[in-house]
Length: 483
Ligand SMILES: *[C@@H]1O[C@H](CO)[C@@H](O)[C@H](O)[C@H]1NC(C)=O
Ligand SMILES: *[C@@H]1O[C@H](CO)[C@@H](O)[C@H](O)[C@H]1NC(C)=O
Ligand SMILES: *[C@@H]1O[C@H](CO)[C@@H](O)[C@H](O)[C@H]1NC(C)=O
Image (cartoon, rainbow, N blue to C red):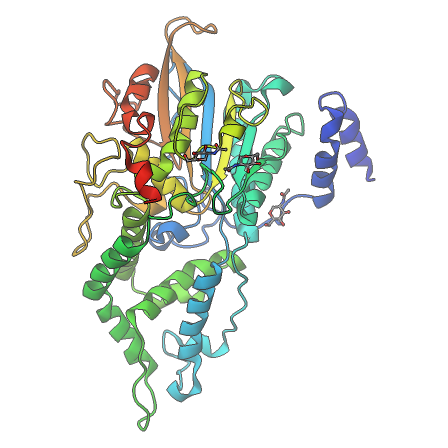
């Protein structure tokens, strides 16, 4: 063992229970995650802002705002994080479709010209993996853990107050959680090392509040239709522009590029960039004014699949909200949707005494959670997630919408619910409890909470009241999930 590691272990033995050594050793053996010299904020950006923040759920993580500390008379005494896995390869099905688009363009009969915007494809080889976290995504998660430590370390004064970490069962989610933990532990100089995450199965039939696998009746029909309507209006001109640059031979019919191919080529800008760590040539194919169309197209997909726009969108986030309310109020979970009572009734698998909880999940589930909460309505107004009266238009970009998915759940995107104690004297137990919510670092206005302040504070009691949709188990909607 390297001398540094053994010194480290000697000092660790004073602070860490023996049972944790295997994890510590594994971390030391792995070393730091691959260092990559790009990231937004400080280091050179991977992509220019106008692209990076227009990639919807495929945007690499970016801070939407600088972190604003709570008002001076308040201090944070509990933190609940729900975070998406970091940047990943395309899913299996997406990979097939992306590869097919590329193969179509590479067919020699089109004689792709080197100087056309797509000319780089002559020498491009598809070499992306599928499903898994990429090194950049591991780093996003590691950095998030490091940030969480530096922001909230003062809450964790002893080993009994270790963060409690859970992860949905996909490998990329688990690895995001462990990289977060590693970032957290490293930032603490290995004095606070969270235990390995509790993994909640994503198998069909498993009750999981960190994944949207519990609502078989929720399909993609509405989302597909919304995206198709928008695409049919705005993508043909882009598709035509691309087709013109490809050409063909006089004797062969012209290339049949579709709008779906165009969307694929735009998605490749993100996938290829996060996989390789350098700006992908796919990004240069598109004009600046074309990216907002892509973003809105992706926003529609999430809004109408798991968000406010689907009758069964918000309901899928209710179990998580009920767990959150339990933590915030320090009382047992009351839920009749998708919580697993075996887990939530056991303090080992659902403790209520931790100052910091970190849950790792997926973009679709986070879309359901924010919608159940009442955040990111299409527009300002009071609504707690049960209503679908405020919908995003599908015939134009709604420039005033709050639902911008790259600001909700980009890769490694996170929703952070802080519980604050506010009052003149800040001793333990004194003052009044409040809730503040940050999405990707930006403090949210809690319109749904009575008496919410301009600083985003909502009295805990009023916050609980505002979550009537969750507390009623979704006003009867849960039954429709399996109808
Ligand atoms: C971080 O993620 C990478 C990539 O998925 C993985 O190979 C590695 O094991 C993870 N590291 C830790 C400490 O979990
Ligand atoms: C609940 O969690 C327990 C413990 O992890 C697991 O054995 C069981 O299968 C889960 N049940 C459901 C319905 O998810
Ligand atoms: C899983 O959820 C179903 C539906 O709400 C519920 O009937 C069942 O008791 C839950 N199982 C566990 C182990 O919590």
